Length: 80
Image 1 (cartoon, one colour):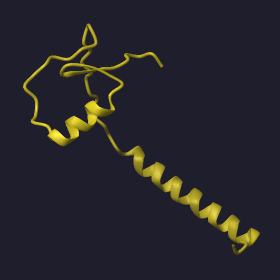
Image 2: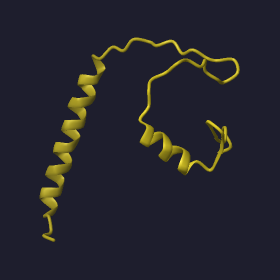
Image 3: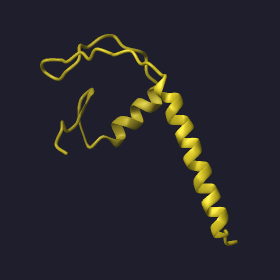
């Protein structure tokens, strides 16, 4: 692997700082809309009909699940 001269390293660092400086200056003009977050009182969502899933994917998910009960995967909730 070829060695890079100290002067080349300093030049690269200077260019990187300039790029980051220009990028941060351009971000100052970006305005984001504030989004409201909906909190569910019990930590669950409402069930709906949903989208049709890929049956191969579904079978693979159930094969890989540690524990399952008929049509549901049993998963931990916030143990980590």
